[in-house]
Length: 423
Image (cartoon, rainbow, N blue to C red; front, side, top):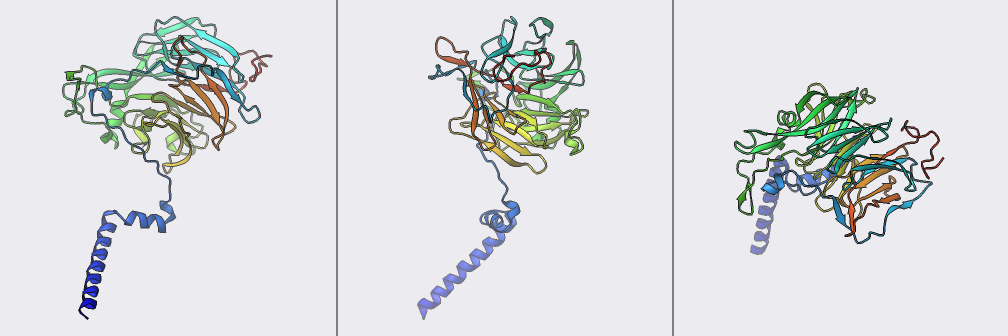
């Protein structure tokens, strides 16, 4: 009887303890309450991408990145087009530039060079953007933005701190730029590298400038901008004078308004951008520069090249820390609706993803110097290895590859075959 009474007493105590913990768990949304909600409520079965987040706590992490120009590759015999499934790949002309060259190329699906641009800028091109008429914008990092015609003649040059990306909208050129200034909310003494957008006329004259750092700082997401007074600003025991690169904006796209009836997010003139160091992609109002939408922290790491899709979703390149992915996100509810990942697929910096008209996705694995096209199911139907390989077996990086559908590049001879580059 005594043992029975003891067992009943212990069971009662445990039951009371579990009941009490249940109340605490529900109130504070801790184990096991979230797990029970997912089991009983299908609304909580939404995919969530959790990756290790990078918080810069040293001078090295806060300095502007020195992008690698080339990567050692044991497979240097692999060059040009390696895979081509003509039935499932989307036919078009592929535009890209090598990091080690002051040149850009347009190639057919079989790798044949269709057109080439080059100009001596005394510095490698960071990014290149091709216009339908054959004009080309090339960024010489932190020094210059140049505009060449289809014959590689220099139309104009803007000597300024252009970096990463450029976009054309309504007869104006929007280029990413940056400047150093003291931002007391970040650090009272050390300069911050402030990301800005400079708007140029089509002949390279400066029209206006606005701060992306200010736009994010004054938004409800301003908490993502770090306060760095207590950060270790020494490298190997010595103070570093490099400015604090707290955002590192690396991509810009301007909406044409074709999806404006779906949501105010997609109104004409709004901007889609990526910030590497706050692990976020975001949309700015084109007039007020207010942040209208932001997604990414704790879900992605060090992202690049977000683009708006016809369905009103955002495609982006998630570099990650050890493995890269391509994600498609719905801004309406922040759900990841499609992803591509593959063992060994990784680029520490840069990277690009373009949704093609047939539903496939063209992916640029920048640092290793490869690009490939995948189906919605993740099958590779076209693959390209940059043929620019040095004598010491280093393959040049590709900043970003973009495929143009036949007929969209007006400077090309009519009837040019996108498969072979012939007539």
